[in-house]
Amino acid sequence: MKKTNKKVILAIILISYFMILLDNSIIFTGTVKIAAELNLSQTTLSWVTNAYSLTFGGLLLLGGSIGDIIGRKRVFMIGLTVFAVGSLLVGLANSAVMIILARAFQGIGSAILAPTTLALLMDSFSGEVRTRAIAAYGATAGIGASIGLVIGGIFASLLSWRDGFFINVPIAIIMIGLTVLFIPTTQATQAKRLDLIGALTSIIGMTALVYSLVGQQGRLLALLVAVVAIAAFIWQEARTKQPMMPLRLFADCERLGGYIARFFYLDAMLSMWFLTPQIMQTHLGFTPLQAGIGFLPLTVVNFIVALQVSKLTTRFGNTKLLTVGIATTAIGMCALGFFSEQVGYALGIAVPMILMGIGQGLTLSPLTVAGVANTLPADAGAASGVVNMVHQIGGSIGMSFIVAVSATFKNGLTSYHVAMGLATVLLIGALLAVIGLILPTLKKESE
Image 1 (cartoon, rainbow, N blue to C red):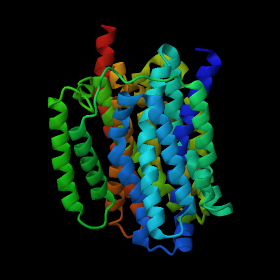
Image 2: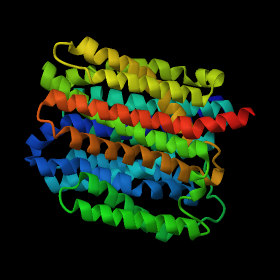
Image 3: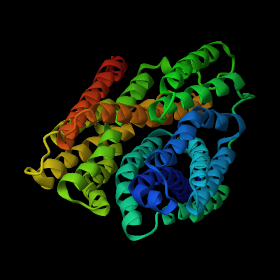
């Protein structure tokens, strides 16, 4: 394949993945205007986000495995189409019911796109080129979430929140056209069939788990349903000949360490992304746009460091980067816990964000590499689905836990300090997963 084609394929994958990340930020920064324009109560407004989270989290494993069955190029274009239609319907929404249903439909597209982008990357690149491509993919995960706050702030402050969704439609159409022209057709792996019982139990389990975190009523019942359904899913995957999520994915210590570390890392980072813009607005008087711009120290440094990851990986190895990256992120997160109005933005937020930008830049790409390490071609879609499931579910669980605990403190600044302290503990958990599970594999390889 021509070098130019490889670059176009990578661009298609990264832009499509970035669209998913951007939408969360637009919703986050646009909630006030959405509520005012559509006359939504606080409870109804929460479902604009929750409906998306339920379908996205609930269908991720299915989205990851279905590409292995009917071909990833075809599934990728289906995902782009569903996401584009969902974005259009969200932008056109004129009632609570319409926007909630449209967001749920958009979540289906994201559940197909997120794992398929990574699986396509695994199909299209190999060797050192794959390492660089995965580095760019991991960097997109970090940079996209951070810069999305800036772009979301621009839409919320200067344009319409609807424009943030309408813009996805022409981008998706362009991506579909480029996919037809540049991405090779991939065949189904062997004669693999859809694991219907596994698909059903995973959807019920993941959806119930997400609802137990974000729902308003019956959360304990949803948690019980999630435990039973997930247990049934694991039992089914252990006994079926063609599992949707082969349990052998968790037998490799490097992959398992990558999954656990990613879970704890996203727990911490999503909580920081959610709470820090609020503390900038409530204690420093920032506007939503200024709060988004306030993330630039993290975003810019992350971008610079992420560009060097492939070179650093070649020199120092994936595991060493992970160790240094997570440790640096934890130091920055801990420093955020000392913020006050007297300390101010520069020392209280910007400097810690620089440390976190370095850490995030060194971490997310190697975490992605670890999550798909030593994967058989037939399992690429399933492995990608697990990486994205851990990313999505991990962030939701961590944020729900940290926000719930910190909210028990009435003083807003104290609440923020507690939240950043808990986030630091979770990052230490991620670091221990790397040291305990991934580092020993490095020692074995060198022996």
